[in-house]
Image (tube, rainbow, N blue to C red; front, side, top):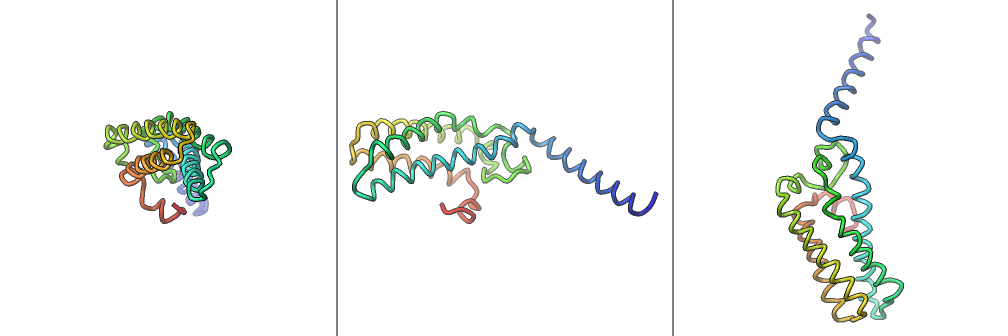
Length: 164
């Protein structure tokens, strides 16, 4: 066997071992869920920001901005806890800002997720009522629910790498 053939064989073995390790820690379904999860969470952040921007403008566009974005938050939050299956964290080998603490402290994570769901549903109801004062208060409550989870379960690298 030539040196080149040996090197190619060794490289192939290393790649196969790496793939085997990745597959042993997370299946393709878990890895495939990371990007859609990140996209949905960014959508939720964008919806929250859009509503906040409307409040700052002073003239609130309820029908085109606030109501549809509040509906997005309510709809997406209903599935929030399904986006974090075991194996879809850093151990998957895929880039994720989800900390292992999500799965280590899953009961707390689920509690925070349920709080976010409740706050999103309330925000949606306030948006439908078109009450600016109630919107401001509920937007703050929704923001606190998001922050509580992010502070405990999202890597600080997210803030360094994204405009958050």
